[in-house]
Length: 187
Image (tube, rainbow, N blue to C red; front, side, top):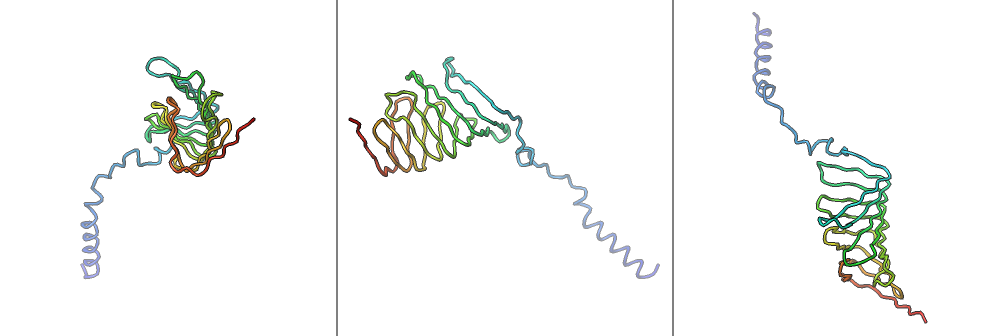
């Protein structure tokens, strides 16, 4: 054997020796939540209507959506054009909530975005309509809050605020940063 053949052979053995442990090592297992399959919905529905009841069998809320996608591994459901009807035990008339987009989380909390409108079906209620671009509603506690600009319309007034909190059961409202109230009494 000449020197060139011996040098090539030693170089070949050196390459194999340095890479052999890497080639023989087990591949790391990537958890499924980090893969693209977690971003694939488990199921989809179009023109979906769902009715939910509380533990005592009373109507809690209904949801209609033009499109729904459920992501089980990520723990949420996406809605397009959601329309929620929230029933409050102490009231005879429900609240209707609509938006362009919505996300329902496993802890019964829904975040609604883009053109959110909340309508009180009670003609005698303090707030008749609430408009904002973002709101989070706790469907168990029947509370809602927003840190975005909000307009609250009543029978003879309009309230502008940067954020608010509301309890639908007690009908108590808290303005986080009151901007303006316009009162227009009618004769």
